[in-house]
Image (cartoon, rainbow, N blue to C red):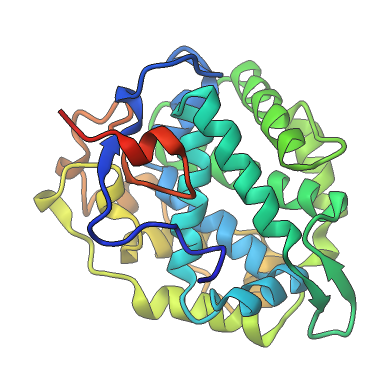
Length: 288
């Protein structure tokens, strides 16, 4: 089985992350909790995935695990990482991050341009963590309706920096300005590849029709067409060119006008996830 496919079958137990007792790194008063528990999170995750797919090293890794043909498996994987690291207990978060590091360490090879890469490269990890940080923050600021203040945004980046170091980054930005400077320096990472464009195309082709008011949960709108369209509108121009994405600017009304009623009452996270990349208590617990 590909290490990037969540380790759970269709009949695996489901539980709420928030129902599992134990100490956590973050609380409801933290900016990272607000951002990752918002209905804009699926858009941020998919935006980050598109940014990763535009990097030849990551697109080569996607080929190795088959995620270029089934990119929604990687989208689910990234959701697990973000949700458990933010809302899970410290024990579950550490186990999940260790599994993620092991997965990335298993990848190495050459890109479509003939350049050697290895998954544990600290520079690659730093950039990928920065891309996900930026993607989730910009999705929240654009679509949440209650954006963070500049100080809260800096605090969000600072909180993510601790997670990035656990993933293997040797250094990481601590403010939004530093984050944007890192991404500007890294614009050359976005290059056209067959695998990257194939993944972006499959994301659009395999996206489901938006469930609208029939599903009232954050995860109900993962992998729907609204999420893909919104994510494509957020990515930097170099990523859009590398992946041959359409440029269709979307504002909050355009995105959530389709699913507004489905998102009522989601001011706090209602997270239910299958046993993900092996968080042990999530595999044991069942909903009450």
